[in-house]
Image 1: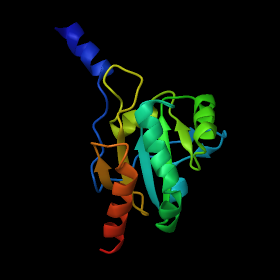
Image 2: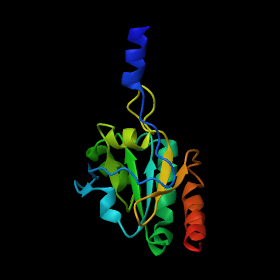
Image 3: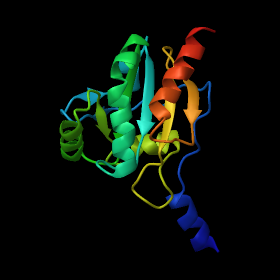
Image 4: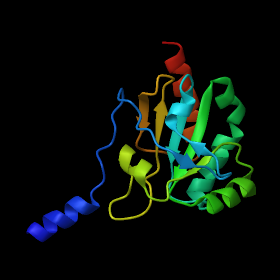
Length: 165
């Protein structure tokens, strides 16, 4: 029983952050070798989206939807940051293949996924979830259920509602 408890605690993920809490910070490299942190984006909205892996059907659909709405995100003063366990080389190939105009962050150790509570149990893969972070650095919305085809538009609609409050 003790062994099972130790095993369970070593593979458990952190609790997910809650709406209204400060977004956990991190320092991660993007596909171009540039370092990014949440603090870099103070004063603007951030759509931090976690996804399982580069160049798979759902992940490609989601990334391309963000790409296709990039001008609306820029107009809304919202930075898109994609994040998965893939390394910078994989991210660079993925970004180049689909002309993705936003950073893809390499969370190869899973530290950010753990901090946000989106690491899949006992796997080196992130759950498909998004955190909309406000200009003060707090979680405004946590999207636990994401449809890759409509998620980008959903965030833009929510941003519009949040900005009119």
